[in-house]
Image (cartoon, rainbow, N blue to C red):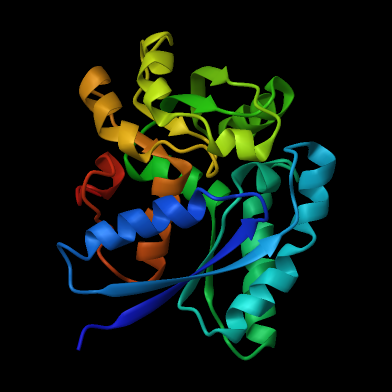
Length: 250
């Protein structure tokens, strides 16, 4: 019998994309690999993507980690990139350590991945030093994300802030708009494209299109989180139609 892995997600209450895109990638993976997955979430309150709401939401992540560890999940992902990045440079390391400690205290030690840390590691995994990125946030939060990534020794050569404040509106953004947005960007010298630096803004169906359009590796925060979850489970990090990072080359 094929092993079934329980995938836990700590999700902003208004996030509907992470529970769509990560299961989509891992379900597609089931067509090419034997492992099976189930999906489990715990929610932190957040409606508007503002620094104050993000900080209040992050304070709930310990409770969520505890709840998911009650279900004895095999890995858990903190599914909000900007909440981590808004807490200060390098904060993903502190968050991952603290949340794992909550699971240890509950006698259910679990690997913890943050989408913020996963994006940084995903960019590095494909050997990219210079990126262009698209984010749905207001400009000040987008600049904060850019600064966070630059602090991890990755150059951000160009970026777009779509300035969508309401988190449900972020989820409603049509991923088919992304190829045109990327076409308007300066990609000279860019090694890779972050098509969505946000786990709420859908991008999965557009990733193969933008790779074909630009000839460059394309990833998203959701793709990078899936990659890191599979690595944490000691499984081959592959999934069909999810771009270069999950192609099996890395």
